[in-house]
Amino acid sequence: MSAWPIGVETIYRVSEVLSRSLDYRQTLRDVLGALAEAGLSRGLISVADPESGELAVTALHGFDAAAFAPVRYQIGEGVLGLALEVGETIVVENVGRDPRFLNRLGIYDPALPFIAAPITAGGRQLGVLAVQPERPASGELKELARFVTMVANLIGQSVRLALEVEAEKQSLAEERDSLRRTVRGKYGFDNIVGRSVKMRKVFDQVRMVAKWNTTVLIRGETGTGKELVANAIHYNSPRARGPYVRLNCATLPENLLESELFGHEKGAFTGAIGTRKGRFEAADGGTLFLDEIGEISPAFQAKLLRVLQEGEFERVGGGRTLKVDVRVIAATHRDLEAAVDAGDFREDLYYRLNVMPITLPPLRERTEDIPELARHLVARIAAQQGRVLTLKEDAIRRLLQYSWPGNVRELENCLERAAVMSESGIIDASLIHLDRPRASSAVPPAPTLRSAETATGSASAPPASLDPEKMSERERVIAALEQAGWVQAKAARLLGMTPRQIAYRIQTLGIEVKQF
Image (cartoon, rainbow, N blue to C red; front, side, top):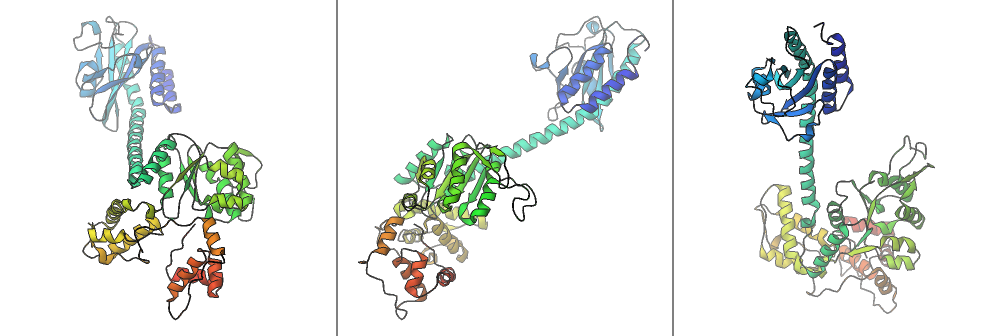
């Protein structure tokens, strides 16, 4: 051994390389570099494929392994395959004279020796370390083989950990891809049912706008499926791999809404015990869906406008300006034009949001979609309940006789109620309970906010009878709401109640409030 520059120093260098690098392949290349400096050149490390067991050249000193065509060895094939099969170090004194040596890489000197040592860890054969001494065989070859075996054992743990990490990454990647396919199926176009002319127009708009980063404003009555359209836009866009963050603006007061969207710094207000990121930061690189955008106050509208225009904001209580790359999809059931005219909604924010408007038709304007939609909803309810449900034709005919003021959401609730009441799993007309029967097949569209206010403010409109002796309490409340254009404060005055009292009765009587 004294004639070779190999010893404790080389072992120290190898162990140092194995302990400092997190890059698996670079670590192996560095180990081969340390061996080359000790006179063991043309180093090669091949790792066994966990599934096929074949040896694949993974690291090669002095050459770019990627520059060679994929070189593989079956178990027992060539000197490398033999070392893996027998689990022992193979020494070839002169590779040019040994028929077992295949030299597929064509880089080895046929007049020099060759040493191949199996890489093992935990009783598993993981690969082979091979080197070629830089001078002909001598009495030192046996000692060199012992040294190469020692290095191969040191490499074993690194190779084992690297293979486990790669297997875990592969498993996570497969799980991620599976989840993406599931999400696309759940939130894609197939989840939005409708073949009517109006819905086909919506589908065309969604497909076009999904490709770009344009701000989208989804409009439509409550229950028409605005969130489903927002989901479809995100998951069919280039941002589908990015985050998708949702927020209903009507559920939070203004002070909490600002903190929720923009985040806050520690100590910004009572209870702010730490720094918190807002929804805009969470959605960076993806999409932010702001539902009920028409409910935010004029003061907050100015702050939102800046983010939409500049992509900049400050956290509550902070002075540092943050930049984000977020696509905004907004939704509302309100008549924003009327709100702008009344001074309740900023005109500049309206134009900023209304870049690409998509209007969802109410269910009463696409009754031809009801049969297909009902079957789709029943199939989904059946999956949730874990049983087979059958929707009879007489049930569908009954569904077609109703105006569905609550739109798709009301239809789904109706079918779920019918499914719960059906012990056999068959849903027929007797299980379809409707609150207000449809007077005729031609139902006029719901009035807009402007027309509703005009109707309720008109002195010529005849007041509806609210006689408690002729009507039930539920009928009186509904009649008052209809007469007041579904403005609860006005309906309360007609009934001699406070707004709080009528709100309580609406809840206890199960009245679904129309939104205009």
